[in-house]
Amino acid sequence: MLIQKEMIKTVKNKCSHDYSILACMMYGSFTKGEGDQYSDVEFYIFIADDVINHFNSRHWISEIAPIDMLFSNEYGTEVAIFSNIVRGEFHFLPVSEIGIIKTFKSTGVFPDTKSMHIYDSTGQLKPLLEYLGGTGPDRMTNENVNFAFNNFVNAWLMGVNVMKRGELARSLELLTSIQKNVLQLIRVKEKTVERWLNSTKNLEQDISKEAYNDYVLLTAKLDANEIRHAYINALNVVEKLYNLLVTSYATDINKEMISKLYHHLKS
Image (cartoon, rainbow, N blue to C red; front, side, top):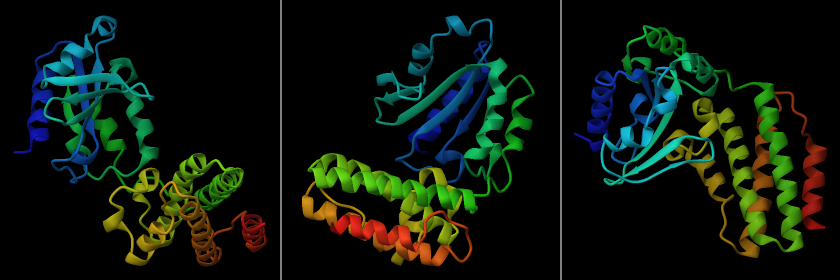
């Protein structure tokens, strides 16, 4: 059995024997049939309101398995690096906030909500998880296509400008945003939008070989020529995507804007 599955069992057992824990749900790869030896373990744990201010999350997490590091990331999530080199994410919330689960529906597709159910003594968790089921949000919309195109133009122009200024490291950093926007457009074109918010996940299997090769052209190391070619290639790929998508979507970007960007790069 995978170490992660043993840890998930431990979490379930701990929840059922801890009066402070009223509900627990899991998210991530193991709820989508994609969990393997490289996957994280990720949970929302709901604590009784009257004890949450005294709840020792560090101690609770350390009883799942020995930990080497435990810290809060930029989103306020408690992240554990266990001694077995498994990574864990833990959100501890008062049970009065369990309704937050409904807000997850806009983030993606939840194909197996039953696997998300770890523990519940409130009777609220099952209906909340069932609410998450279904096809998920519609990503193939004018709004999303415009979001990707418009943010591409923004990041591309910034990246080219700082590149011309000689700030190659910053230009390379902005290339990451460009790659994300292009991948979102590729996913619309190829109808693989389930991973809209995490556009690189499972990319090697999700998109066509041609599209993957286009993505490769958008990558570079910290080298002036490579970065410049990546920006040229990004514009070429976006122009191709525009020509394919404009027949189905109303876009703010047009051929004139793309021509201006080409001219700006060459000037």
